[in-house]
Image (cartoon, rainbow, N blue to C red; front, side, top):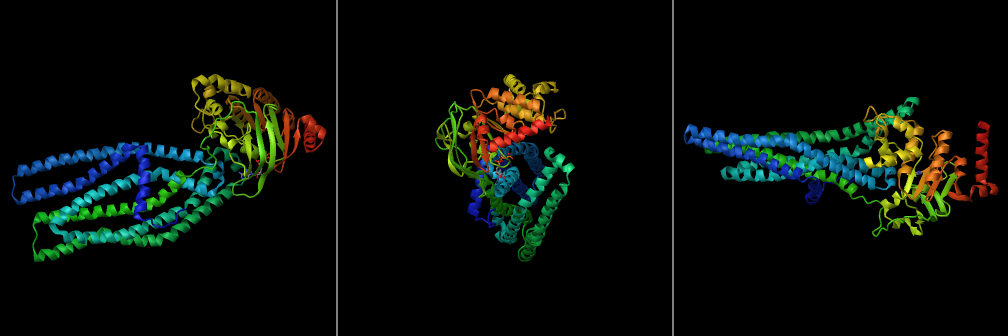
Amino acid sequence: MNKEKPKNLHNAIKSNIYILSIAFKLCPPRVIMDIAVNLMSKLVSFYFLLIIETLVKGLQRNEAFDKLVLIVVINSFVLLVIKGVQCIYNEKTKLIYDQILIERMNLMVFGKAFEADISCYEDAEFYDNYTKAAAEANGRIIKVIDTISNILSGIVVAVCYLIKLATIDYFSVIIVLMPVLATSVMGKRLKLLDYKLTMENVSHNRKKDYVKRTVYLQKYAKELRLYPIFSVLQEIFNEAVENIIKNIKKYCYPMMGFRLFQRLFAGSLPTIGFMIYKVYKSIREPAGISDFTVLFYGVLSLSGAMEVLLYNLITLRTDSLYIDNLKQFLNHSPSIKNEVNAIPVPERIESIEFVNVSFSYPNSDRPVLHNINLKLHMNRYEKVSIVGHNGSGKTTFVKLILRLYDPTEGEIRLNGINIKAYDLKEYRKAFGTVFQDFNIFSMSAAENVLMEDAEPGKENLVKKSLEKSGILDKVLTLKKGIYTMLTREFDEEGEVLSGGQNQKIAIARAFAANSNVLIMDEPSSALDPIAEDKIWDSLIEVSRGKGAIFISHRMSACKLADKIYLMERGCITEQGSHEELINYNGKYADMFKKQAMNYQSQE
Ligand SMILES: Nc1ncnc2c1ncn2[C@@H]1O[C@H](COP(=O)(O)OP(=O)(O)OP(=O)(O)O)[C@@H](O)[C@H]1O
């Protein structure tokens, strides 16, 4: 969180201009039109003052009634046109541009989150920052445009009033300005307290959002109904609300005091002060009716304009505190990224080598992988299998290969070159991966297989991939075939598939991806034995001529690999072909025999 210190005006302006320049890049008309319309609508009130002055002077000089009526008619028409333009802008143009701007700004924030290291999602500070940035993206950019356009137009119109009023009676201008300036100090304190309150509530609001999301999302629905876990969620929610209330109570009294003082000074004092001054002055030297009218109307308008201007100047400063959160997020640089001279990934992957690789997850000093040295010869042994007990580090091993994390020590080489040297996007694309915790998106079956836009030319690829994973027949029976929406989140005609069927869709992704190496982390955990056999046949078929790394607890499947590595507590303790490891009669042989016995007794 930022230090809650008001920034100096110079830095505040710099922060606001940073956001304004982003807004200008994303949607130039929104910025230009807002400033133009705002300036026009403020100048209208000054123009109105000039018309009143002309009319009052005309009446004093007994000018022809027709002439005065004509002035009123022409100016009313001008005002009507201006109000019309303003109305169209506020009710239509502005709303549309706001959506465009918010959409583009959000895409920018999503892109940034997408770029961030996967470890960031396990980092509460990053998550808080992301939440703040996402919240800022929705409103702050619009607020900044409004604030800056209010300040620019406010300065122009205040200068017009000041010049006009000072030529009549400069002292009344001073009377009006003094309380307005005094209230600006209150306003500043008020905004700062408001900022502190919002920031202190960020993590509590995040907890509330987590509970809301959990109750709403389908994937938690079963557990929520079967276990009394909701009471724990309720506790989290209640605690968050209680903390928010505590914070409100902490800040509400000083905020009330400042608000009351501000209302009093800004609202009533300028008018009362001006009246007293004018009564006092008129006793000594009676003023002309036109000067009095212009002064009275002008003083009120100037006081209002100054109040708005000062409010916006304060907003500019407090906005800069929020902007810093957004700026910090947008400037976040991921640690896993392309090197300056990233090289293309070779077409044929010959080997993947771990050289003295150790790894601990961020914010943890517990090593998950210990000094691993191995070379997967993808050209010699096409199919490699990693086996081991739960938590031994198999998935972590794969995550490092995919560069979702970088090793804490040592390096991983692909065809003898450190994987950090390769173009990251291309590198990850070289692997067709299915994780055990795959997700099905609320999109069509075709999009879920291709994991990109399902262009009509790709229909065959989708069907072939679905066929290999044994789910094509089922998908073809659905109302819209491969274009059927999976899940009913957005489409009542969407299809909800079973766990095993969903897993087949996820496996089809690997068949559709034109990747060099397949990585399968428990690809068949939800499948029935017959489907599992078929899937393994297909996987073996597809990985022919490519490489494949399988993680599975089904030893019968691991047996199909050319080379098997046994992982125990983050170390590779046995390696060899199935026959070699059985003959070695170590842990692998033990695990295999126990599972085989299980199967036999089941049969
Ligand atoms: N994101 C994470 N942050 C911190 N620790 C993690 C994270 N993911 C996994 N771990 C820890 O790393 C260890 C290895 O986990 P990993 O998922 O690699 O095991 P695994 O062999 O694939 O297990 P399983 O067979 O159950 O899938 C575990 O002790 C786990 O608690």
